[in-house]
Image 1 (cartoon, rainbow over the protein chains, first blue to last red):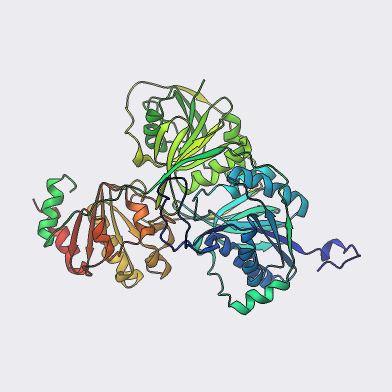
Image 2 (image 1 turned 30 degrees about the horizontal axis):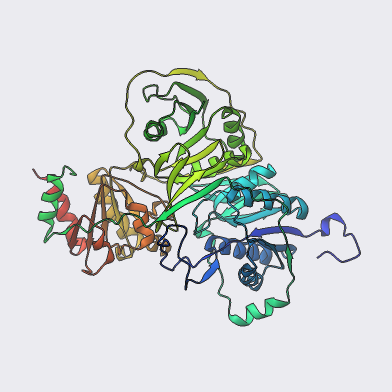
Length: 259
Length: 298
């Protein structure tokens, strides 16, 4: 760990992992658009850490369990209420948290720009984050951030190892998986099968209240590149018919030219 | 002048993307990253990069961004690879991106699913260029014919990432996203051996692909890459046969563009019956062999 007032020799500098997280509506709640189509109805809905970001936090903590000299900073961009999700990440084992507080909406390009500023300041060796947020399902911010920083990236990660000055990441692909060796610093986005996040009991969350949480304002203005015009429920797929037996099923499919 | 660059990581992907290009109504060119681009899809130009394999995203993103100058739209068919690479392209170009477009209102207004498919958002993009990944099921079939002019382009591919190993899904079954018929199973398939024997056997007999629910994948019955659903593959076959699948929102979000959905389940109250075109309450181990026999006879 770095000692205050003394610049440590290079080999003692801890490796730094930055984990951006997002506050999202409970991914297991049934979500409906508002009647006027202006957004989703969040009344009575709980908020959680985006599940893929929670996997990223867990992975950072597990990497530190293997290699103790790792410092983990979690960051989020959002309203003051996001403190709740940062506290949970601290309870999981992150060392410190940064809340970039804003009431403005940041789309993926704006998030990438703001996080790139932070990365230039903090100089992490790895940025580990979820592959996508379960509210907007964009799957963009990690790649855009990597592009801004000109760092290599590994998305859809299912295994992460750090070996000296590089990271070895197994990632899921359309046809199976591949393993990449990336120069550090790099951006890694977590997929579902990377790990199963630990359960945090309430006392752990209360204990995490003593860990440092810094509030600051955005350095960039989020100039949106997209505008949401409308949200609506998808057209339901109507229930078809019950068939009594296999024969009836096969006949029906043949009649429709499906077999 | 508005113009679309359609990126095909493998040359045949352009067939699916050309339907989107037709509906967008803009002149378009195809960038074939590997292989030889097809010249009968209605593109004005086919740009053949002639690479033997698709490079890592940092290298390919930069290379595509270099070719993309002057285009108002840059699109690829939705896949894990296109999400990896195209979002990087958008980052380099400082562009907005629309992930998983399923419809076009105007050339700057698109529809896309959010929150695991429980909401369809209509999104206006306020600045060009616009980067997109598109789900082909939402768009027309391309008209085949005519001839594109062909050019060779050279892509710089130096990367800060090295591909150490690649593990491909085995067997000769069609890719899930391309298959005309998919047989898909959940946890009732018991174990990996049963899953492969029963569903794999059925798929091979019918020339189809095998899919799985997240529950089946999480419990180790089926390999990861077979997972169908919002967090897995989005599929749109002519015939989707779900056996022992309850029909979670998550799973249904991945199959709702299928032409015909058949559900076979022992549980008459399984939610999947509410969205299936044909529902059969039956034991899958008895129903599937009988299905095969009847399907193959006259």
